Length: 564
Image 1 (cartoon, rainbow, N blue to C red):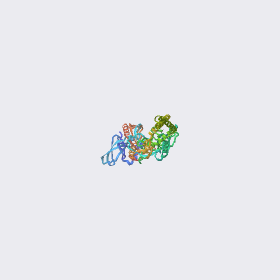
Image 2: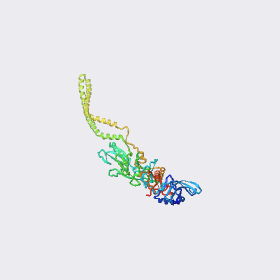
Image 3: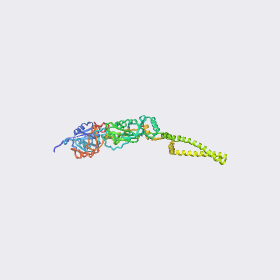
Image 4: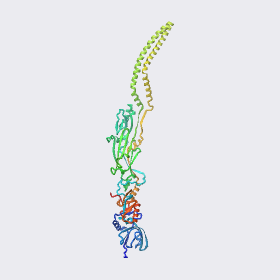
């Protein structure tokens, strides 16, 4: 049997930052790139030993001629049995042992990933986490399952439709008695909506209607932003579009390294109608541009204000009607008027013709009847006195004649009065119904005279305080998680990438400096021993981070964003 000269080369490295936990390792495209890199890593070389005896990869211990002080910081090694196989084996040094002043024992465990880097291949499997190839906002939307703390509002944008001061008008809906209804905003309406710039103008109009006995024709009075009174569509509606920036800037001054933080639930857009309702939108789903969120506002002013806010270019829809927010709680106004004047207007509208009739029936005709009655009474008195004197004188003499005349005159007068009264009552009976009706109506209207001087209608809006302070209208709030939590989550993404949870080929090289990958059910192929292949699969299922250089291991301050 021929003698084979010992020809195994061993290189010991120190302070590499590599460990058996496989939290960190190195990536190389090929075996040649790997071997050349380690050969040139002179700053990490602790010792080199040539012409050593054959080393078995599974044995786990080797003796070298070196004092132990040279090996205290050793943590990694490689060796090649040149005479038997032209391949480097890479291993973790677990510890070193003193043998004598010139000899030390090195204990090691084979590193299958580094040993077979450039040889083994990865087949598709479930990738749980990894650093993505791209990191634009919205590229990664898989739920991370993190508990979110409170949000803070980083910006507020009001749609230009507040109700406050000179920016609003007083609107009055009045019933149209002429049957002149029309289609307004696609809906038939028999009322007309009038606009007044000041309260004085509105008061004048209310008094006009009350004096014309049309106070009840006022349906309602409400406030409306002047912006909504601008008709911008052929349908007679207000219809405008508003663009807002999504706020892809910072978290209270902290600029994240990972753009996933600018997506929901770490960042959201909230639209409030300033009346208790709000709608949450995911900024990454607005696709008109990468920086803008667009909303369309449609308003109809008819017997009130009805407004709808529609997200545009959201979730793939030009107008996303399913996630709109509406507003109809604009300030409703109260109004009042002098109820006696209103009653008097009703009274005067009815009584002039009845009073004329009364003058004709009672005043004119009764005066004529009264004149005739007086003449008849006079005649009766004279005739009655003569008859009484004749009768009394015949029976009682001169004194009887005088008494008879007086008695006869009174009797004649009474008879004539009764007869005249009878004629008067007979004539008045024809108009008795009119008198009774007038009196009854007078009593009815008298009973309707209010006991209080004013009538108040409408209602006081529950939004009056908000209208005076902030205004009624849509408001867009840019809300983000607090900077402290943003920093924690950003650091987590920096170290471990994003949740993927899909079947794909694991990628060990997606970022400039390092790439983390974690799988479930990893499958290793290639010309690799079975035991080493199983160990490699276990490392991937546990999670491993691949660096490009020993000098950068652990430096998470590097700009590791994708190159694109």
